[in-house]
Image (tube, rainbow over all chains, first blue to last red; front, side):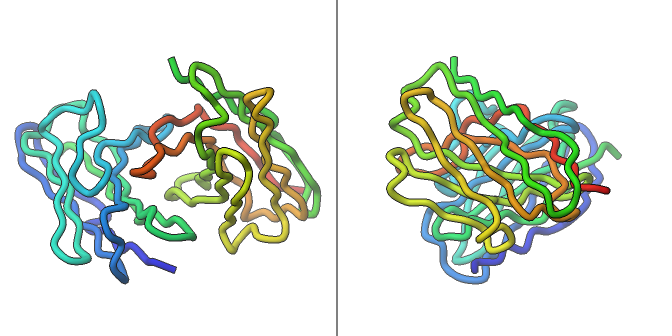
Length: 107
Length: 119
């Protein structure tokens, strides 16, 4: 199974900050990698797919990148609506796996 | 508009069974792989099972293999998850989602249905 180690688990930041969340895969996963945002009581919403492609309707302040087996989600300038929990996901092989999540809170 | 609506959740005793369903609308259901993802209270996301568009391929997480059965009815645009031998650790909100063909992300999700396994 491919393990995804997401960090940090918790992040406190201010509106306007640039933040980075990282996900490290236990083995290569090609480009089948996505990031999701989840707000309390709601279903997850995909932000980034294929490592760096922005899902339709997602603001351009969100971006994704990768270096080897390390994947990064960057929010260039935090907005109030961005405070949520973020999950990474690999869909390269079964079982499909998610990272454990990063809770982003207002400082 | 794509809509996914789960139903069938509820309280069940350990060892019991439950069938949850997902009704789809707003797209050609038979063209897409569909999946179940669950989330235990206060925990992260756990992928459960996936069924391809024609039901030719089915996949399960090890945690549910041999106990859960995924199925779909393309004529009715519905997907189901038959859950047997339920355990307290199966307690979660169960989401159905549609997988995007090619890039494989889960682009559309339902609102979830809560399954509680407790005596």
